[in-house]
Length: 94
Image 1 (cartoon, rainbow, N blue to C red):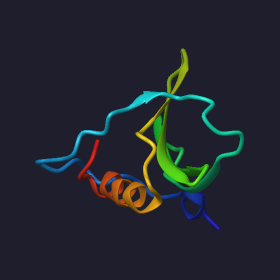
Image 2 (image 1 turned 180 degrees about the vertical axis):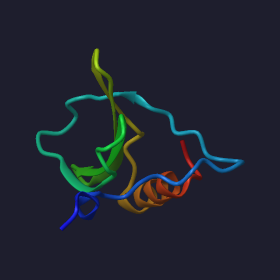
Image 3 (image 1 turned 90 degrees about the vertical axis):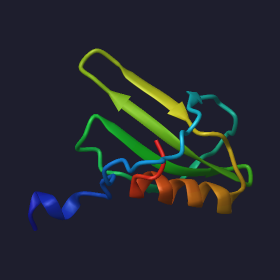
Image 4 (image 1 turned 120 degrees about the vertical axis):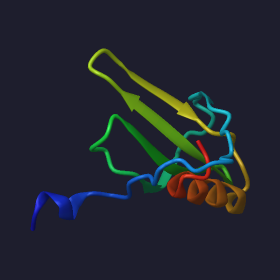
């Protein structure tokens, strides 16, 4: 197997008319969070679709040589969060 076989999803380029995601600081809102899907960690900014306490959200992690910054989308009902996740992957949300 090659290194490329281990990559996860990559974001598609941003499209015109995209939806703005209101990112906020990550909080300890739930004791246990399940990661349902994630983007590839080969780039400095990666995303995870997470579920906890009957809701879902997107976690964004921005890594640099100096620090790591984690933020979250609004917590939504699962169907709405999956729609937002798909929009982010397809370039329709940022």
